[in-house]
Length: 331
Ligand code: TRP
Image 1: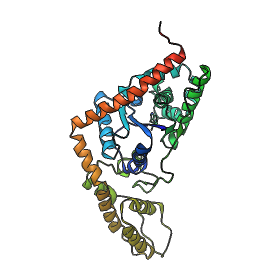
Image 2: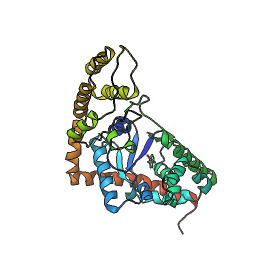
Image 3: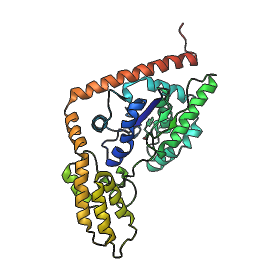
Image 4: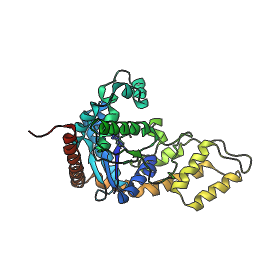
């Protein structure tokens, strides 16, 4: 069975875009592949979180992934910092990663531009740590978005370089992978592009948002002054609301509002009210699970203990073999 690895950013709560995109993908994959999903809390150190924030964010992400359907019996879910072998592999790969190529990575340049006062070495070698995450389990499939494609390319480079240097074929090349070729589009509420937290708090609906907060956010979503001529194409902001409706509402509801739009009788207030209620209903089971799991410390620690053990078993095996290949032999 092929192995899948994905690192999850430990920067807090999940929105509907994460839920209907990446997580739905993970939930399907966990039955078909040998999956490792981990919380990337070592990567998070590049931005210097306080110990309290680091802990709270990692916990929240674990809770929300479990609530959203990651099954700890099917997949291995673990915390990156609980598997020290990853730091060791990172060290070995660093010996064979060149400063020039690391400086040319687009995400590094973006981060330097955004935070010129915090250009630390961890930021520079972020792609090496990511390669170590993947190669640690000798994974070939990595479910990540377009923004991580260059990092994956670098993982392939480091894997191949290791193989060439030590005249081995130990590491296979990892590639980006999506279980579902047709990923649903989840736009934000600001009338522009996709849902994301960098676009501002009001643009995204979070899985942990209460029904009142969801109503407030949806009612404030950007619209226009409405159609005056029948059967006109929709402006982006309006299309976005219909796209969200297509995900959370029944086909009848979508059809009803489409007809209203097409004969210029639509009232966006009514559409938003309906959208908010359908969104609340669609996310209710996850919201309930988030509360249940969050209150169950024993469950969380059992899940994590079990995941860490499975991850370390795989990691130890790789590191034993890697040390042997490198030439660290017993005297
Ligand atoms: N860099 C990824 C992101 O920002 C997170 C990540 C860290 C990751 N290590 C990984 C993803 C290994 C896939 C595999 O989303």
